[in-house]
Image 1: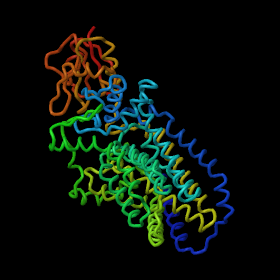
Image 2: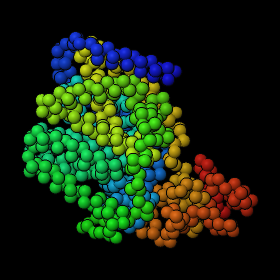
Image 3: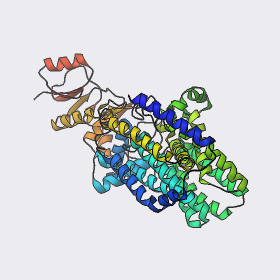
Image 4: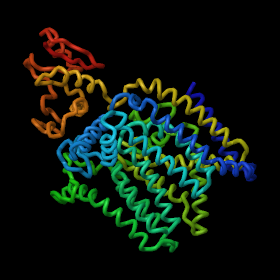
Length: 541
């Protein structure tokens, strides 16, 4: 049923796109556009309220469980908020070690602030994802309304809000998903600077471009490329002052220096470096080789699927709905063509437009996406904002060409969104998501309540330990006591040992998931057991 509906709406939208593209006459009246200009803010407030509800409803329970990277960021955020150090006792690190390969810092610091203010809970940890997404929605609407018109702003904002990509990425704390939101905010401030020629906006632009670097490592390449191309264009047009370039470059450079030092140290060029207040950790292993031209051949075969339908991680998209729905495919493609045509016209007029910046962002993210190892939706999440922009721009274009087309497409999106949201809050809410766990936290809570001196845990995940830290949560100083790490995996800390010893310890608690032989041996030895999901907690009174 869902696939049939999606196919029907796809072909309907494709036909509309073709007809409106070849149609020369404009049917939309100025009265309609004036009405949208007059009531645009009210309509946007309605869109914003709907988005706020969609992003906060049952956020603690959906997605179900806690992603392993969420758990790592959450515990580090607790440590930062209470002790000013991460779990490995680095003072305010510019990049977190997490499980050895590193984790981008901005989300952890934002959640640490929320924890400091509101306390510790999964809802509070996920709060920055919601707040930054809603802020980016406001900024996107305002940026398009100022640089285009309210009709374009409303269509684009609406498509963003109802898209599976926006809903699914905004409801949990994966730090890399901040990039799409921060890039939107940075682009808005950048446009303000370019349009106003005021020093303040250039300084603020440099600050936010610098903060965006702390959302995801791919930003290290994307941001210099986007800024460089736009500034080169402005220099060629002689429409920017050198002092304004420096005003933006100085705060951006200051914020980039810690990350540059981190890259230099972890590339083996320097042994160590220090900066005031913050620390630069040495990672256990360096993932600098994840971007390579060698990844292009396999990525060419799957990038279209990843952009629109699914990837191998089931928490990034729901099959049948994808990232932007199937009906968005012709809108994005036709919108891209329309934007390219507009950019060429702007070139001839020697004018900089928002179309140009969105096109540059899309191309750069697309090219970088081709080079990323194990490409997935969250790794190129910044590309979806330009894609939504292209789709919304063409809906606005089509609504000018034919009466009621805009309403028809909005209704089509509402229909798709209704089915998607029903699935998301019912079937998806019960799904077993990759790398999401919760039963370990509940089992650890039970084990802790038994007040034994030793807890043996079957290491059913590579990073099982992080969930036990969330269950306690002990201080990072306690975590360091008796800490043992083998092959980049924590095998022991405090009372916890992440392997089951051969002789049975009758004074210990056991947490077992898959080891049936040891489980049966403990039960035969008189151990009581309580089941949490698939994890048995065993103890002897």
